[in-house]
Image (cartoon, rainbow, N blue to C red; front, top):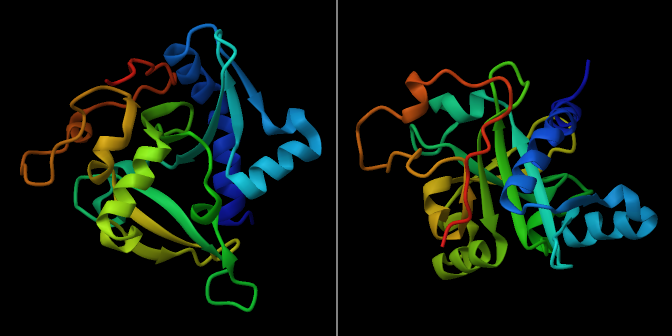
Length: 215
């Protein structure tokens, strides 16, 4: 049986075409360069800098990007959410947490410029919702708050590499949103009305590329 870690990596791989579709919609004419193309250098960027790939723009810029996709139930099921009705962004903190092999995780070497974070459709054939974060702004939010523990809840995976991570309601990172699936799809925590995705039928085609760069 595959571990949760392997399952999550498999999901990222299956959804990559839809993630690249978002990149192309936000940066027309761009090309995505995965770290695999760079051999050992790419492995170094991935391991030491938290970079999954580069968005190569028409203006000869290379935007370093990290990406993560989660299952649909993390988007919709309140038992997985720090604030009921608000999905979480998850930030890996320590690898092999609590073991003799414990080591700093992604947070300590996250030097990409952009962070794509998406949720799969219920049948995992596309993207239901997504955000693109400006990482320097995200880090500034954490710094101003006094650390990840001030804005998120520490949790630990019990499978795979037993990594610990902070679950952070995405509304607490709103100032770092660079682009999003659709403006207004998050109901503020103080609003008691149903979350908008409760009565939506997810689009399985993965064609939900409606985002614009926010200013």
